[in-house]
Image (cartoon, rainbow, N blue to C red; front, side):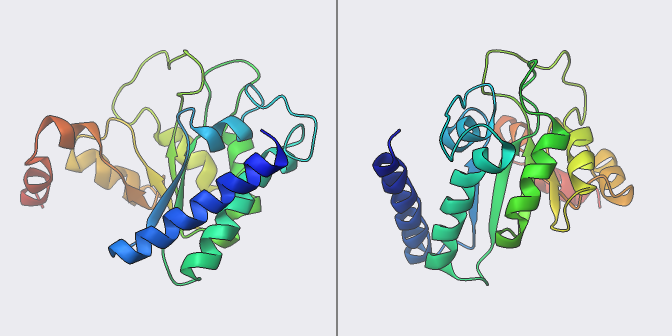
Length: 193
C-alpha cells in the first residue's frame, strides 16, 4: 500500500465511524484481529514494510493509531470505542500476548476496552480449544493496560464466566459461537443467575 492508499483507508474508517453515529449505534469495535488489514499491519509475520509502518512495534502499530485518531475525531471522546486483537498468531515469529499488550500501551488512551481473541492470520490453529482457551491471553494483556479487557473463547457456562470475572482474569466476557448455535443461549445464562 502506498501512503495515498493508507490515507484513503484511514478516511474510510473515519467515514464508517460517521455512519455508525448516524445509524444510532452505541459504540464501535475496531477489528484488528483474525487476519484483517489492521492485524496484517501489526503482525511481524505479514508486515514486511521498511517504512514508518513496518519493522519496530511502534511502527507496526502506527496504522491502528492513525485509524483510532480518525475515528475519535469523528465520534468524540465520550463515544465507546474498543479494539479487537489477536493476541497470538500461533506461529513462530508472530504476535505473542506480551507483544500485543505492549502495542496496546500505544493505543489505550484512545480506547474504552480491548477484546482479546487469537489467530486468523496464518493457517495455524491452537493445539486445543478447551473451555476458555483464550482467557490466558486476556490475563496477560490485563497486566499491561488500564482499560477494561474482554475475554472470549469457548466460554459456555455461567460458572466459568463468573470465575473469569471473580479471579480478575478479565473485566467482561464476550460470547460468540454459543449464541450462533442457540438463539436462546443468553436467556438461559441469565435464568441461571
